[in-house]
Length: 471
Image (cartoon, rainbow, N blue to C red; front, side, top):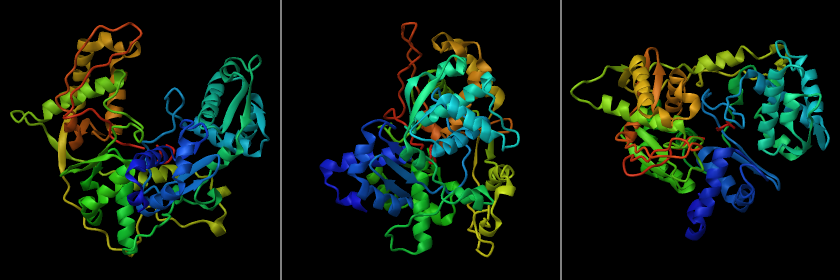
C-alpha cells in the first residue's frame, strides 16, 4: 500500500485526495471545487494502486477529469440523485438526465437549452410513457433540474442567458451552454454495454484487483468489508457473513482504511463506523445545522432516553429481512427487453451467489428496541411546541411533514430502521444520547442552531452518493 510510504508531512494531502475521490467518484476542473482536480492529479499514481488494492476500485485520471469506478456489492435505493435545491430526482428527471447525456454526446461545442430540450423531446417519443412537452411547466422544471445536475459537474457551462428564464417562459427566455465533452464522456461509463444486460445487477461492476497475495476469496472478502466501511454510515456485524465478520474484527483491516482516508474508526461490539470530522467524505453531516438536522438530534436524544430507561423496558423485535431481489426485480421489470442483444446478454444471478456454493453460516439474529409511530409523532409534536418558534417557517405548521423528513434522515444515517408500525432503534443511535440544547435569541434571517454535547465530540458519520455511485 503506497500510503505507508508517503512522507508524514505529505500524508494529510494524500488523505484529502483519497476522501475527495471516494466521496465524489467524478472530479472535474470545477467539481466539487477548483482545487480538487490538481490534488487528485498530484496523487494519481498512489491513489490508482491503493484504491484498486484496498477496495477493488478502478481510477482513471486525465488532464480534465478523474473518474472512480466503484464496485457496488448490492443495490442501494438510499442514494438518489438530487437537484441543486436538494430535492430528490424522480423517474422523469432521471430519464431526462440520461437522454440529455445522449444528446450532448452527439452535439458540438455549444448548445442552447431549447435545442437540447427539442432533442430530448424527440428521444422521448421512442420511450413508452415518457414525454417532454416544452409548453408544460412541470416538464420544463424537471428538464432544467436534469441540466442543472450536469452543469454542477461541469458537463455543461452556462455561457449566456438564464435557464430559469426559459423554465418560466420558453418563448422569452433562453440559455446557451458550452459543452465539455471530456466530462460528458466520463459521466456515462457503464461497466457493461446496456444492450448486453438482462438484469440491472450487471451494473454492479467487477473488482479491479490489486496486489493482495492472499487467496482470491479472502482478498475479495477483505475488499468488500473495506468498501462497506467507506460507503455506509455504520457497518453492523450482524449484516455480514461469518468470514466478513471476522475480517471486520481485525484491527489491521480497519487501520488500513483509517490510514488511507485519515478518518478515525469507532469500534463497538455491534459494528464499526468511520468518524469524519473533516466533513469531506460525508454526504450528510450530523449533527448539523438547519431545522431537520437539529430536530433529528433532539429526537435521537429523546429516543435514547426512552430505550435506556431500565425501569420501563421497551419492546424488542428482530430486523425484518430486506431481500436483495426486491429492488433488482423492480428495476429489471422496467428493462425494455426488445433492445437487449441476446447473443451477448449476461445471465446474471440476482441472488449474488453460485447455486453450487455452500451458503455461509448465518449469524444469530439479534433484536432491537422498537418504538411505535405514535410515540414518535407525539415526541415531534412536543419538540415543535417547545422549540417551534426557532424552526424554519415551512416546518412550523407541518408537523407530519417534519416527522417524515426527520425519520428519513435518521434512517439514512442508519440510526433507525423504519418498519411496520414504528422504528427499530439501531445501536449507533446511543452515540447521540444526552444532547444539550441551548436556545438563544437570533436574527429573523437565521435558522435554529443549537450547541450540542455528543459524547466527547461533535462529528459526522461517513456516508458516500454516492456513490458510491454518484449517488
